[in-house]
Image (cartoon, rainbow, N blue to C red; front, side):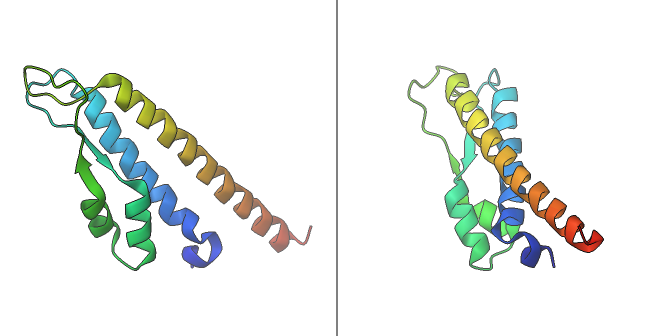
Length: 115
C-alpha cells in the first residue's frame, strides 16, 4: 500500500537512511588504521529497487569502496572532507524526500477529513 501512496519516495527514503549510516560509519572510523571507506551509489541502488530487487540486494550491489585522493600511510581511506560533502548532500536529499512524503500524508489526511 505504501508503494502506491508514496511511489518511489518510500524506497528513496529507506535507501538514503542506509547511505547515511554508511557515511556516518566512515566518519566515525576516520582514525582507524586500515579502515576502508564505503559509499552507496544511490542512483544504482534506487534503480535496482525499482526493478524489483530487495533492499538488501540493491544496497549490496551498489555499495562500493571509495578510492582516496590522497591515501594515508596506515591504509585508512577515509577523507573527512569527502565524507562530510557526501553526508551533507545525502542529508539534503533525505530532507527533500521526507518533505514530499509529509506533504502527501497531509493531502491524504485532508481528503479523509473532507477538507
